[in-house]
Length: 70
Image (cartoon, rainbow, N blue to C red; front, top):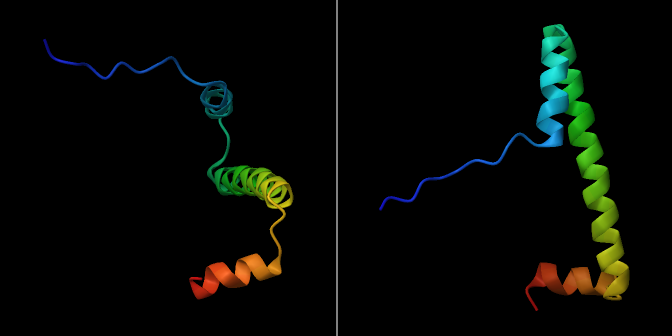
């Protein structure tokens, strides 16, 4: 019996993007939309990293040790 890679239905993000494409978004908007999504995801990741940093009581000294490989 072969194992098949069964894909789940489209995610909510994929559905929203398909709606944009169906609306006929001009090509020059696509680069702006990609940048907005990237900035949003970067902000979310930075926020989550900050929470972990605080939870673990990391400091600048911690980062310095990591950079030095200690």
